[in-house]
Amino acid sequence: MVVTDSRMIELVNIGRSFRRADGRTVAAVSDVSLTIPEGEFVCLIGTSGCGKSTLLAMIAGLLAPSQGSIVVDGREIDGPGPERGMVFQRDSVFPWMRVVDNVEYGLRCRGVAAPERRAVALRYLDRVGLGHVERAWPRELSGGMLKRVAIATVFANGAKVLMLDEPFGALDYVTRHQLQRVLLDLWDDGRAGTTRRTVLFVTHDVDEALLLADRILVVGAGRIVDDIRVEAPRPRDTDTLLRSDAVAIKHRLLGHLGLERPLAQGRAAGAAA
Amino acid sequence: MKVRHPTRDRWISLAVLAALALGWQVLSLVYTAEAQPGEPMVAGWQVLFTRTLLSLSDYWPGGLGVPAVADGAERSYLAALLAILLHSADTILRLAAGLMLGGVAGLVLGLALSWSRWTRRLVDWPLQFIRTLPLLAMVPLFQLWFGTDALGEVVFVAYGIGVIVFAGTVNAVRNIPQIYLDNARALGASRLFLTRTVVLPAIVPAMRSTVLLSLGAGWGAVLGAEYLGAQSGLGYMIVYAQQFAFLDRMFLVALLFVFYTSVSTVVLARLTGRMLAWAPEGQRA
Image (cartoon, rainbow over all chains, first blue to last red; front, side, top):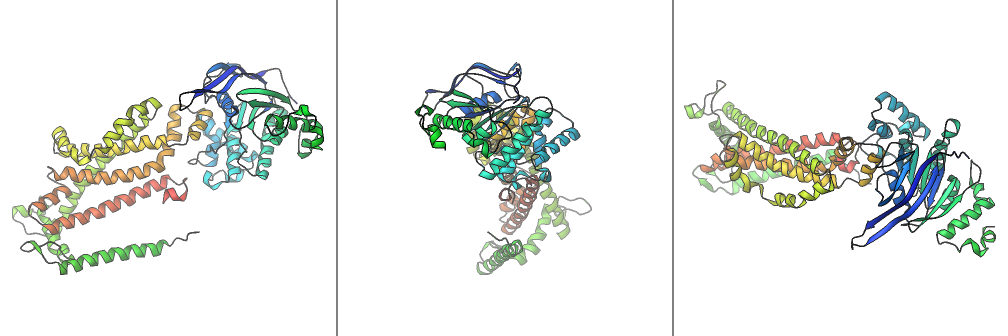
């Protein structure tokens, strides 16, 4: 595991409240402080409506926090920036651009010359296994392929911090596992070169978190309620999920999600066997 | 799965058209009442394409070596054809100028006002108000403001089309899925770049029906303007014929309109269809 001392993301007393239709103010996120070192793969897990997507949207700069400050790569953020990339839960690929033009979009925003950005886009399309459909229209692709395009797009844009908001939630079992592998493969690029990219991955799937994360943050009622390290070596597979430490974490997570009595009951190990 | 039969569908459409034409002919034979002596209420095709067509040479003001009937010349098919071309060109030019002017102004204004939530709120209510204002009610006002010459007509058509395009643009921009805007912003798009690469292409499917709608309104507006005061154009031909109860001429000019509106709709649908190669088939057809 590569964990350097450099702090990539730093949240200080972040809060965000919304005004509901009836005039009452509801806090989606309250008083979250958090430090994430460069290169760490962090999964955010929590029940629906716990504030994890709001937290992500704030770090992405798409939503301004009501209070607190967010520092990414040494700079306090004020809106979206090219050092951060976002993969959304719903399909975000522009249907009016061909696949390769979609992947180039971020580079085009920053004025990268056409041949150069085309080369980058094609390279990442190849990496996600879509080299053969570069000229296709998005409507011709399946849901899983569209997710591959979205992943290629943020990687091509060269962001240091990647945020993924339940990206594989709507996909079937096989496709989800293929895409997890694609994502880890791209993330692992960092190992050979300099440092890995920092990833924030929102999910509600406990196994997915165990397979992907260095660290799992449990979000509940707008706060970080648990912070768990996953020490299992990579590459991980289904067997990883059967390791005793993974099983313990799984029980702890299921407890947080209200699907199981808390670990303190002492039944956990027995139930897993 | 639905199977499409384009050839068969076309034949059916043609058969319906032929039946309509035949029905008209039968009606002209059965219903022989006359508006005035020698002027049938329902003119059959044999009248429309001989005597009526010939009579349109009255609208030729002379020139190109073809003298005007008003100057004592005989009626001729050549003069009639020239008259149709001349007056059609006048009307179409007014329509085209108004369409360009109103379309561009409506689009730019609509995009500008969609810029922020505040500017959108600003126009929400007045927009509903202006939309419901009957276009033709404004004809006399525009004539006093801008005169009865070509300028007044073009401005009037531009107004009629501009309102529709403006409202359509505001509405279309509002309906762009937020995810595309978020995605573009997250990838680093500036406001202007986002407008060009996301907003404009995203509104094309919705704008397509707006443009077709405004084209219909445009034909209505140019005719309305010509009814009241113009000295040329197809609308002028109809009003002039009405004064003398030349029903057959009015019908023939109306047929010309059917032809022009059909052609303009097809051309526009083709043009916008090409811009929608990316869209699902249902939005292109």
